[in-house]
Figure 1 (cartoon, rainbow, N blue to C red):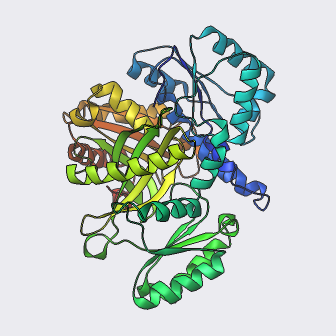
Figure 2 (figure 1 turned 180 degrees about the vertical axis):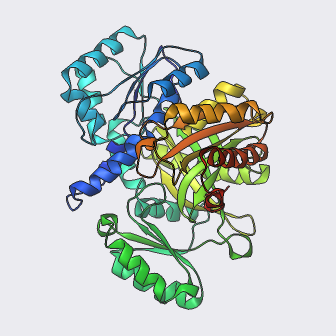
Amino acid sequence: MTSSGGGSLVLANHAEYNAQCMQTRFDTNEVKVWYEGGAELGDHALFWARGEALVIVSEEIHPRLLEDVRRFFGTKAIDTVRPEGDAASLSDRVGGDRAVSEQVRRWLRTVDRPDLLAWGLTPPLAAFLRARAQEGVEVRTPGIPAIDALWVVQSLDSKPGFRLLAEELSRTHTEIHVPEGFILPDLDVALSAAEDHFLRAGQSVVIKAARGTGGYSTMIATPFEQPAALRRIRALARFDNFWRVGSVVVERFVAGPDGATPTAYTVDASVGADGSVLVECLGRMLIKAGKRYDGAVIGKGAVEPELATQLRQVTDVFGRALAERGFTGLFDVDFVVDAEGRAWVCEMNVRRASPSHLVAIAHQAFGLSWATDGAVFGRDYLYLRGSLQLTYDDLRRIADDFRHQSPNTVDLLITQASRSLKRRSPYFGYALLGADSWICAEEAARFEKFVYSSLGLNIAVLDNRARV
């Protein structure tokens, strides 16, 4: 769901969304880590509007990246603004910066039927929208639920909240498969259940904190590791306060062929004002270390037709359940598929989904029929271990060199680099376009080796990267 008015005000409030579930027991350093991770994803917001937009970001966007995005969409009418301050709440920072606040007001009054696009609904964003309404500025919010539905977001974006809904729906919808599991009061009880109910029976187990994003605060234990597995989880949890906030979910690990990690899929959808459910994208996810999101491949060949039908049906059921609770806007449902081809629900994100920038890129490159006419492979975290002082221009030259010598690559875009290249362990994100998903995956593997070779890095490191 993207802009359909005269222009879009885009709020890259990733960090603000993450911060809403960080309660008082999180210290300043922990919040800072999550803020920095959210700020680095701000580059993706440049793609959300697919056209004229004012993009409010937590940190400055590299000017050459902005120039490349403008060139790709064929417009100069994409601008960015950064409010002063370093608080996680971007909405609050807009209100606290008089110059930026006035710039936003002027922009909203000069654009016909402006849309506001954001990562997700938060209490600060709700306050921002109420303030605009009081000023008499009409702002449409495609993709963002009504303020009254904030409780739905906060409930179902948690692992226990989603599991409760999934169990409820599975009783009347046989197409919904929920892994056997429990919602337990704390980590100690969860580890006891994992050991007694699953591991002693020879089953691997997934343990999920109530909150977390991108696969963080999720642990996997196998019976082959016992008793070290649970000791490892307990030790790691000491340094992650998400494990001490809210309930903990314990589920049977769904294995893929030969007991290996299953293939993971995501379905991005939206609920309209009339309660209708529109599936906007089906994708095959890139998963690192068996649990962490690293990117996705979407478009032609990404999901087999029979499986796509199964995923659409289940997503539709969840969408209608959201509508019954007063929710409208963007959401996604994540799945893993077992060795028999059965899809099991994992979680729901009641917000904009991570591959949304890839959908915008595919739509621009291949048109309305992008899902059958082409594909996009997107990796969000290609780490460049051992590389020092790499600039965006260096990276851009490498990407251009690869594009010119690769006839199977339709296009190649850097999608994330403004802050991530400045890290001690630098990384970047990219999107590679091709005729179908398998060509894209092969070309992406070639591109990553090309990058490492061009920088003189150890190519063997790439053997551990997340795969589709």
